Image (cartoon, rainbow, N blue to C red; front, top):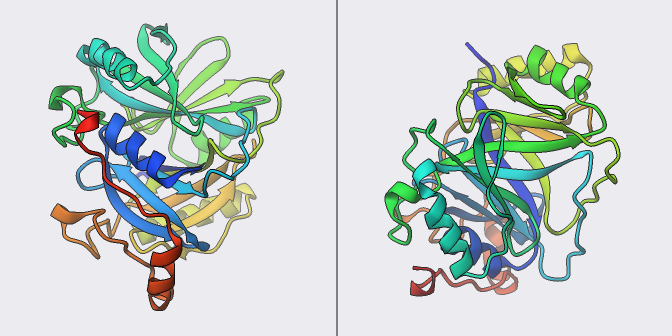
Length: 317
């Protein structure tokens, strides 16, 4: 059994909480599946956006620290682009939709044997792509804002910039169940399978500036492992590889371990369960503020200090 089955989630540092809600649920049409707080800093939200149930491989999450958070800088040693998968037939629709809501984007481009993509950024400058393809059988979330055949299906890949790719590639291929899927002059795509939601692109950028953490940058990328037992087996592999890591941390909806890959990006191994319906009904995911048990006694204070947010309205239809 593979210990790593693909991507689980990507977590970014962002600014305005309402801007996060508007962009990811309004413009992109993802579902807000959980509204909670940063487990390490409870006066900041932790939003989870994904498909209807929060399936691993669809989950974009944000820490909206507020508009005062200093901007980060894309660069080497960072995950700079998070790519979402949509159907090939959706290209014209998304070009029109992004223009409708004044979201700047680069014109469609091709790479790796004809893969079509457009690059854009969210309201905080986080690097994103829409990748148009016919290889993704996932349904996406139908929230009524976007025709269901054009909805985002989940992640396509993540893109990491590095001085050189070899050491990170060795970690992925020898310890994390990835194999080389495709390559070009400076891009090397690895995956646990040859399908969207399973890919990691390593891009050699030796002349790029080093990335700086801050608003509009990715904090970490999480890879999915089936359960607690496979997570422990991954710890054994990391130990054998000589990579320091955290202890297992209970994140309520999954358990996690964290470590820095050789290029400097923070990796997480997250279990695929128990899932986001452990404290809310599936039909009402994301509607209420769900707090970790250790912060429940501070609910009144947190409710006062956390920004008030509204859910997108007809303006995003």
